[in-house]
Each structure stands twice: as structure tokens, then as C-alpha cells.
Image (cartoon, rainbow, N blue to C red; front, side, top):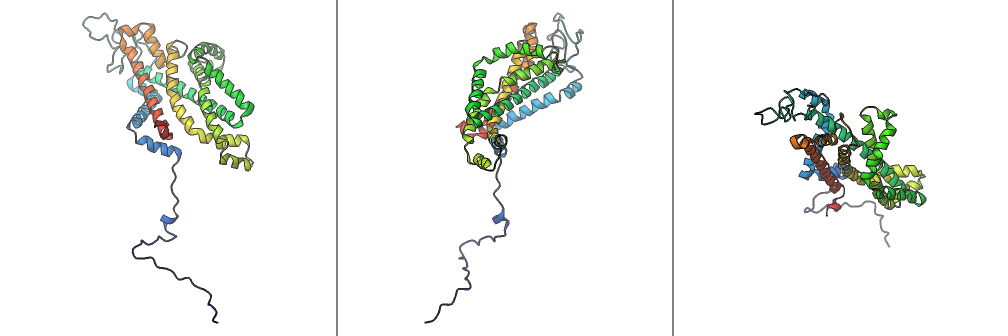
Length: 348
């Protein structure tokens, strides 16, 4: 009986003529990994598809540049926000016959947005510097709220037990108080306490007090949202893997948990900025925020109503009011776009 010869060579089978040839193993198409988009890259791709989102982003960028470049723009106009000019050539007394508009109170070549009635200060310069003050207060207070809310909410959700109980009861306490009344009552007290500190010098006193008050009392809602997200994240596989490698609780919290809730935090931050802009304007309008001569949009509204200038010179009230409405609307539309971009299911 003849022994079977061992199989020493495998015959290659040629592909049929109707099938395309396979690419060689060394070709770039076969070895190149699939490119993965980050969360921010995906969100930016979705924002670019929305005309409203792009328009609101352009308006927000323009407002920020307007505030940042306030000294440059004021120098270009040839005016500053503090110099008063009550001469008849600049500030008419409403009694000159034959003038359809009272002097330079309204826009002119010398004063691009007119002047403040009574004192003759340039409205364009005060609007630019006022935007600088208002946006600084809103952005810094948002940062304080976001940091406190993210850290405390993540700690409550991750550690649980007594830590969760204590932080959750503090959240409930902060959310139970009427926010506006609490801020109105505590702002003058805080300003008196800060008067003898380095923060109490000049215009820093009202700005520092508003940043502390708005930031400290605005974190509770975000903390509750972050806590709910962390309760589901702490049982995920990547957290268990970090524990198995001996990572500490702080390392897991700040390197594994918090980065995975940054999408929610970013959405809340974009919504909180216009809220703080409106809050600063409301507090300055009510007389407990930024005070004259430091300009802010809320202080300009307060000056328009305190002297009843809105009756004789409605333009003085309209300039900061329109700017405030445009800013808050642009930030709100941008916040909605960011929310839809980071969580498309939320818009369905």
C-alpha cells in the first residue's frame, strides 16, 4: 500500500476575473486606522451646520472683542468714559429754540453714540468699558459656579454615603432660598467686609463682591446634574479598571470621572453666562452692584431711571438696554446650539 506524500506546499488560488483584487497587506488603505473625532470636534461639526448657531457665535465673539478692545476703541473715538463735558457745544439744555435734537446727546461725529445727559460723558466709551466690567463679572462668577458645582457634585456622586448626604442637603438648602432676595441682602454685607482687604480698592470692591456672591450661590443646580451623571459613571468598567490598578480616589475622580461629565458642564456653563449677565445688570440697576463712576450696563440703566432721563432722553436708556438684550440673546442661542451639538437627542 503506497504511503501518502506530506503536503509541503499550498497552492494559491487565483481570484476570479469578476472580483476586484485585494489590496496588499502593506498598502496604506489596509494599515491606516480609522480617524476618530473628539467630542469637541463632533460638536463643532454640528454647530457649523446651523446658521443660527454660527450667527450667535459671531455675535458673541464680536461682543467679547468689543469689551476687550475697549481702551483701543475709546482712543479711536477720542473720548474716555469718565470725563464730563457740560459745555453748550456738547450738552444742550433742551431750551435752545430751533434744534430738532438737543445738542450732542444723540450720535454725532464727535460722539459716536451721543453723550450722557446731565454729565456729558461719552456713551460709546462707557458702553465699551461697561461691557468689559459686565462680562468680566459674568465670566468669573460662572467659573466659580462651574468649579464648585462640578467638584462637589462629582464628590457627592462618587463617594456616596455621608458625603453624598451632606452635600445633597447643602444643595437643597441653596436651592430653597429665593436667589435674588438672598443676593440683594448679602451683597452690601459682603462689600462692607471686603472694604478693608486688597479687593476693596477702587472699582474692585463691587466687582469682587458680585463675583463671589453670584458664583457662590450659583453652583447648586449644576452640582445636582453632575451628581446624577456620576452615579451611573462610578460603576462603569473604566472606573473598575482604574481601581484594579491601584489608582487613588482623587485620581479616579479628577482623571476618570470629571472628564466624562465635561459635556454636561460645558452646556450648563454656556447657559449660566447670560444668566449672570442679567443678574449683574439687575443688581447694578437696583443699586447694590457696580456704582458710578465705574461703568457697567446695569449701572447705565440705573443712571437712566434715577434721574428720569428716560422720559426726556430715551436714547440714553435704549443704548445699554439694546446691548444687554443682544448679548443675552446671543449667549442663549449659542448655549442652545452647544446643548444640541453635544446631546443631539435632547432636541428631539
